[in-house]
Length: 309
Image (tube, rainbow, N blue to C red; front, side, top):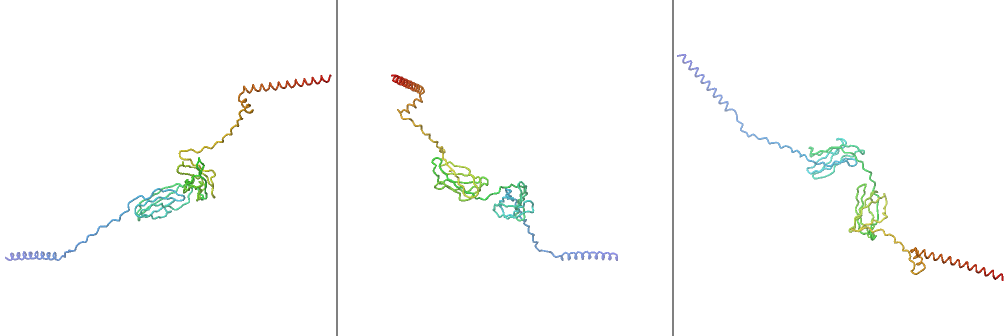
């Protein structure tokens, strides 16, 4: 009986311990606070746009003492770096939107035939969008003299030799490739350049409605106005230059018909008659001489007979 009582007490104590543990666990679970706040989402970062690659450089070339390049900027404003000889020898130029300009490097001393390196870089902001590099050979140009020469002259019709009014005259320097503004002949057919030109071989083009165009060359010296001494003749369209008149030979005077001179001329152009006439003339002369000598002998004979008596 005592044993049974002891076993019952042990079971009751075990059940009480289990119930108390469950209650404590339940209390601890209820005591944990719950966070009901809303979580704010992090916004996405927008990437910085990178300028598109585009071509802005064209036609780099040597020019007297530097290199130049054509810049055609059809996009946003850009910064151009131009270097010559080395990358450190550079200058910076701003080219605005829509501008087409020529950008130059610094000037350098170079001899004819030297090979020169160059670099061009274009930046939109800090981003490189185009570049060009290469080499050019130095080409020396002739020293250009000052323009001090002037020219005057006269334009005429090749047939009538009359002055031509309003003919257009254009001069072009052949060695320095400069064409000057046209001038026009006056009422007297004359022209004179109002501006100085290069002392050079000048190509002259003369044009007038109704006439063939004339292209010729004149050589001018520096200083003063030089006159083209010979007229510049224009031929009418479809016509020919008037020929140089030949002097008309003077006619040989003809003897008057029936005169002694006419008879002698006729004799010269008729050998047979001429010979016959000469023969008759000589015969007459011989006969006259014989008669004259006979008369002289007769005269001498009569004179001697008279002296004897």
